[in-house]
Length: 243
Length: 331
Image (cartoon, rainbow over all chains, first blue to last red; front, side):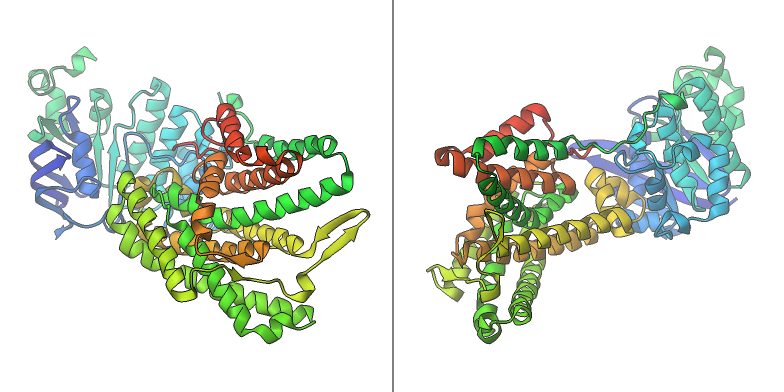
């Protein structure tokens, strides 16, 4: 399986802080790669570096073999990379419909959005259809997260970067979210998913990369990590058994 | 859970405040004809302030740029219009509504084109190097304003320049006992047209959607694949053109222009965009009308009060709604 995204020796500084210390990472095409690690390990910084929001100070970031390090964020996004930030990035004063129009870059108006694709998104997140014309700020936390993921799904993308979608959500919402991401996985979408919840990671991941102190300290199959409690303890300080 | 979400409702309270202000002024002024004259004058003044300030609020909302040099575009707009009106003296002094309006229209177009071109240069040379640095923005844009004023003196001279109204716009309509100046009616109509055009663009077009989204979270707009810098230049240039148009309206309102016209209106503009809620076009519109009406009512009732009525209004509004009348939620 060829790698859609490759990071080699990536260092990132944010202000005076040296956050990433030589990240090496490969995201294979058509698979879900989980990015795990403790708080402050550098997971969010890795996603932001890929998007060019916090550009790498050193190293290579290649997308489909082409160097994207140093490119502006809009240029990176236009290559077909969707980003769902940890804070969701919802435009709260705009309606759900307007949020979706912005995500569907080819659409000038709601009517221009691919109808079949939109119905598919609605089938995954019915609440979005119900509150289509409501300001997004009025949605609950879980519904906002659904909208954030739905925006990334409204057009086919070559790569989805999703940062902790289950954080702070009720179990029923997390279940809904996992189902939606499984649908994406079934379509052979390529996803790099940051998670703290090992249960979610095991449910979705094909591959896993574990980060600590700004480096990838383990990379392999998700099933291997899921099956090895000792490895989980060593890498993450917890295990599936303890969840 | 779904039923718990409230219906999306328009916040009409600030608009009601406008009506309350007008209604409260009626018994204080006493005469209904004087009240009508003052109200139309206040609305005209408010509309002109709105035309000038609408670009400023979007520029601040979209890129966090504090542009104290906005007055440059007002000044150049007014002076370019005065030159065009001199050049078109035949049309401007003719006893024909069409020729008079034609001269004004050409003056406005020329003012907007020059102000837009100046805005483009101003953004590239002065604003671009200081993105994200508020203190430097204040200092360098104030410097830009001073340079602009001096350039006006070099080109047009330091004295005040007359910008007389064409004959058909002089005088008043008589409505009962009330005299309503014709030019003020024109200013109200033009202000409404600008507001309608801006509201339509912001709510019905993708560019408008991007501007509204960018005001809330510009990083996310970029992450969705849109070049916000390009959008910002467009907004800056449009805002400059509108300031140029506002300069013409303001100059004709005063019937003369001085090189300091931009600096004189600066404080008023910032009061309006703060009252309205930084980045909000509707807030800017309502704030400008409140300022215009209050200035006229207080100027009639208690001239000394008029000097600080705008500051008092700003304090009162911010005590009531600390982020302005129509705050942009995520700011």
